[in-house]
Length: 234
Length: 212
Image (cartoon, rainbow over all chains, first blue to last red; front, side, top):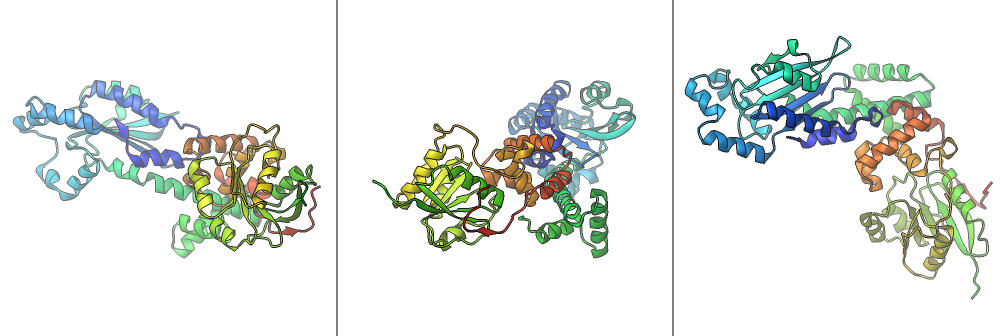
């Protein structure tokens, strides 16, 4: 699988101090292992709660084409599922929902998502993020929770199947670059306020948030105004 | 053939940078006379050549070159052909890589006064780190300082990369090493440090120069 362009961009904008620039490469390596367990896995998203970063990898065109070809040959999971009358574990209304199809199209997958697995990532008894896996067949993740959880440091008992058939995490991943850029802008404005107004970073942040709330605008917009006020170049 | 020294104005947003340039050229009084140190955004008058340091440069070079009476030489880190071509297209008379030695720089200024268009990107004669910049005494390299300057002006990582013709990975590496040197753990801390240590434009014009 390969990262969507927005995930590449998100890693570029991520705070350099975090120092995990090889995260996407590591995810790609993991995606290979996932596909060894679940051959028709067509996408995965890892989301981190701390800074709102969400990264999505999707099957490459070649992988999807191969999957399509397999299904066309008649032994594929979708056709098999159709024959069994239990195609994708979602009802017909969901499948015909235009919005869902739009999201599927956005996912760039030639085959729709038929099953998903959500795994919480737990560190020191706290949920710090989640992994979502997406597959083209209806029962792709059955019996594999433990093995998949182990790959991602996830918590198998907390696994949930088919919680995100609309692949909504992909949309979250698409928004990640803008979110990280906005956060960097807020950080810069906080630094400027603290340095020029002689206040602590915490006070500067609180002042900026209060100003945004009072004006009814986003923190990023106030941050932009602060940066321009102090001679910044955006 | 002996000639009067080239009358040069040194320009950058940061006075510490132009003072560093002046100190660097001070060993060649017979060939270069620094007549003005300038950190304003308007080109100086009454000189043979304007040497514009690209450190932290965010203003429009096009306007600067168009309104300058004297030919402009850009002194920059970027050796990317696109960066050089863009500067030449904007009408600069010379483009000199910051890695060159002082002799090459002085020679370039002389040639530009003679009406040549000069591009010097070879660092073969460089012997030591030259010039000065904010944060140098805190151990920041000029590149790290330049990137911190742009961050203090509000640029995103990608904007910095595009501005300096660097890869995004290089920019993030420079940011990380700079943060480590100044003890910053976040962008806001880095901005606070930068603004308290001279990483802001310091408008001024000094004539005659003081290089101490």
